[in-house]
Image (cartoon, rainbow, N blue to C red; front, side, top):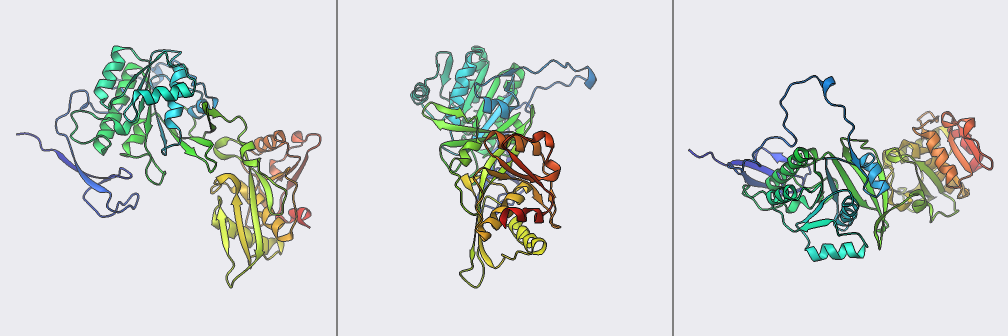
Length: 456
């Protein structure tokens, strides 16, 4: 008797599985996105293999496993290499997600052009024609002579072609266009994406082929589209985001089995493609002006120091209830700082309309080090005190009015000095006399009342 097809209920937006149909997805809370699909009962031998990696059931001591150093390949982009953990790992599979127009295809063809100098390379597209891809490569003035190209979504054909021509590097754009012939659903469906990615992953691990897959995002951009298992299949998952200024892109590691998942890279979309931004701080400080309520903040997002401008506007309330507006910071942190200013400093501004903005669209929701510059910007606006645009601050403010040290304090100070800042307001525990430099004033503070010298 033939085995029946298995029924599953999956959200078409976030890819989460459900035991039965429901009107609203319990994971992403979207309505009418749960669909029923049948998993094929008969799969080809290669597609029916279990697992996503090389199968090795042999038993051995973990200490006896070969400690051969992992080979890495440079991509030609220092920003991408750093996010990957110093380059692409041999035989790994990397997922790159991003909204339409973020620059995934531009980045991938550029990377493959560099990698093709190291070995045979294959570019597979299920979304664009060969002519479109060639036109992009020519526009970017890339060397395309060592790149093979095919436009298909047939995963079994892709893997067999790569084996026949001994390709060392493969890029597939995108996995949502791929399909396995034995799976009874259209490309882009949950089962097709899952089986296609699993087959490509096994192919990469078994044959030592370094593979990069472009993947789509969900509508809100919070996650990669498709089944949740997709994020587990890749050795590294990167997200390419467009900043407020469409010229700049931020590359983040959401997951990395071969390096830190806390790295961040900054790229700029130029006529010649995505290029590294050597000094990201200059992007967010280039429009800095000297006005009350303005001060620079030395952020340390994802282990990388970044200088940004924080603005505050405190004005008399125009209605019965004071207005609050925040962009780029946590509203609750603002409420906490207003309470500290009132209780510990004796300055009452809670009856004013208050607005906070982080210039450049940077988000500092989880950075407690932004407390001190936020507090200074609020008092600066209220007292109409203007800081020089070469003034920078960082530090966490406690409920007792103490100013606490933050991670990477020395690195923040050095980065600020390197960018021309000559007045630095920092927590006392982050200060060291070794950081002093001619022409630079470093002011260590340990309580919010120490800040009165700057606003009186």
